[in-house]
Length: 313
Image (tube, rainbow, N blue to C red; front, side, top):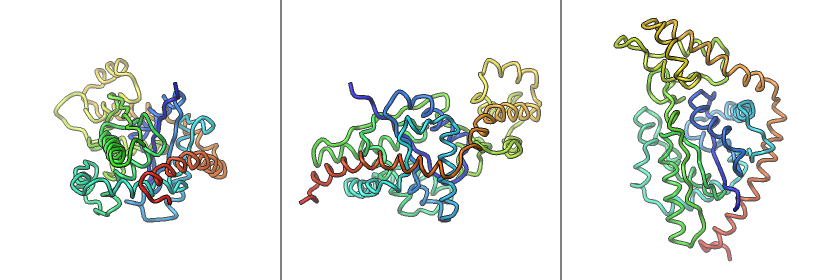
């Protein structure tokens, strides 16, 4: 049987946080060796919110370092930059001609971001079709996502189905892979952790930056166990071990936050050390090699697509 394909990606729109790590990066690291795996830096997606070229360039370098430091072996995965494979945007346009505006208006992520005050630009609105192209170009079988990203995979399946119906069987319909334990990682305010909400704990921040974020976690006085602190803490330590910690420090929120700081720093410190050893030139070489491999596959798929839609003479 042919090896199944796994694909995921993260935006270089800012410093990675622990929500990115537990929601997408760690599930990928834990399972990518079992598949033919693709890992994308989705830089065109980042343009929906980021308009500073110098910052974007640095973010691209940084996120590859993050991937590698977190445990990704570049020799065992196709690690590439979305913008190096123009077939992504070409296929997205084709999918946009197959779906309706009301269909795209149902996107939870779009409605949520607009409600939070983000500019409703057309790229943000069409985002699901570019993501569908990202997924479908590589005959992806499995996409590890957080619970809140499930709809994007549903959109990809819908785009595949519409194309296949109109032009003949071409695309696989992928499945999402969701870890129920970390389906939605809470932020410091109790909402989903997101750069857009400014409620993150940085993945590779200094101990001081981590401490500042943790101490800002919103708590309430309605119980002995601060729910938001505990929800984050159980990502770093088994709940069986947390029981005695939270029992002995019942009502002492400051002490519980300090314990969380210690556990986050102990968890991240080895990754931080690995990250510091990666230089920018190594990152560029990784992306160059990954682009060649991704481009070969994407070009072959798009040649088939162009033939089927009738633009190849």
